[in-house]
Amino acid sequence: QQPVQSPQAVILREGEDAVINCSSSKALYSVHWYRQKHGEAPVFLMILLKGGEQKGHEKISASFNEKKQQSSLYLTASQLSYSGTYFCGTFAGNQFYFGTGTSLTVIP
Amino acid sequence: ETGVTQSPTHLIKTRGQQVTLRCSSQSGHNTVSWYQQALGQGPQFIFQYYREEENGRGNFPPRFSGLQFPNYSSELNVNALELDDSALYLCASSDQGGGFISEQYFGPGTRLTVT
Image (cartoon, rainbow over all chains, first blue to last red; front, side, top):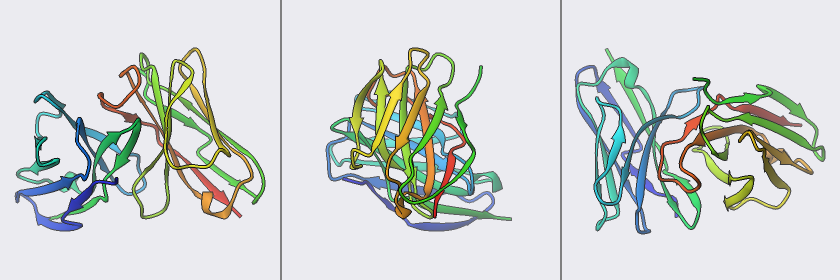
C-alpha cells in the first residue's frame, strides 16, 4: 500500500522547475508532502484533502486527483535549499504510508 | 511555541535488551505517531496514540508498544531488541484528534543502534 513516487531522483540547476508525482493503489482521502534533508527529520510541506482543501507553504504548490489516486508536487524556481528527499504520504485503515521517496538535488 | 522533542538523541543497546524512547509533543497537539526509519529508507509507521489509546498500528510485532500520557507526551518501548531494530525512531505530533487529516510535526529523532 506504499505510494509510488516518480522520478526516484532528479538533479536541477538553480531556477529550474520540477514535478514530483505520487501514485497510490488505494483510494486517497488526503495526501501529505514532506521534505527530509540528510540527517534531519521530515518537514511538513503541504497537505491536500479530499474535496479540495489545501494547507501548506506559500511557495509550494500541489495537485490532488482523487479519481486517479495521484498527487503531484510542483517546485518552481528551485533554490539550493530545496535539495533533499521528498516524500508523499497517505493513510488507509488508520495507518500512514510514506511514499518511496524522490531525491532532489539542486546545483548552482 | 515549543516544538517536538525526543530523548535520548542516541542510544546503543545489546540484542535482547529493552529500550524506552520518549517524545514530547508540540504545544496544543493531542496526537502522537511513531515511525521507524532505517538507513536509506523512508519512515515506516509504527503506531499512533490519541487520548492515551492506540489509534492505529503498522506492521510491527507486539514487542513494539507505546504509551501516551495526559499531557500528550508519549513513549515507545521495544522489547527483545533485534539487530534489525537499529534505525532512527521519529515521533510526530499533530492536532488532528486522531487520524491523518492534519500536518505532522516531527521531532529530531532517536538514533538506536543494536549490537
